[in-house]
Amino acid sequence: KRPQGWIKSHNLILLAGISGLGFFIVESLFAGLLGSFVLRVPFIETLIERFSSTLLMHILASGIAGFGLYIRGSKGLILFILAIAIHIIFNVIIVGVAL
Image (tube, rainbow, N blue to C red; front, top):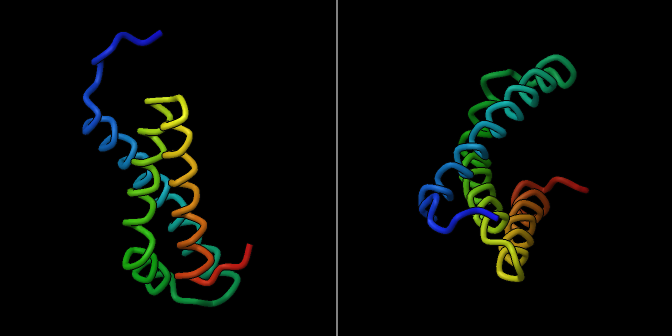
């Protein structure tokens, strides 16, 4: 079991959010390359669109999920499910991506 207080919750949320930023960067580069080669969408246009829409969602959802995984238990599970719901709602309603 982890010793209590080995990391402060705000630092943990920040670190989890940074991991979401890393995922966002990799996903955006992949989407930009795929869109540019397959769909003939200009690479920079895809990147600008993603930076103006999905960056905050990835940071927020990853921060919530990371904190939920850290605190565990029923509250942690609720936070983890909330992070998943934020991502799904963003993809389906805001971006219009069909699952």
